[in-house]
Image (cartoon, rainbow, N blue to C red):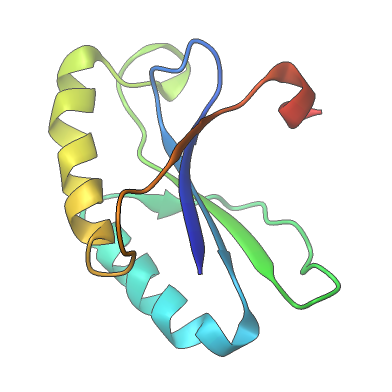
Length: 105
């Protein structure tokens, strides 16, 4: 299972990108439940599975800032929680990819 934080400009609000293979469904479901307990929800739109069967999903936690972004206080409160949850599923530090306009097209 591949997991990374991603953000779009101005890179203040993180979302979580997760790619998993069909044989990792059980682990993915456990991750989804654990994220739900800290109010991170799976995006309703999902791309079709890739030719190799990999499924890509994104999770986010809505904030109170403009466009559902997070304030500095919310970032300080929410990000340690999600990192703590991810420690049970991912070895090492989860990378943060700052998306460019080209990534979003």
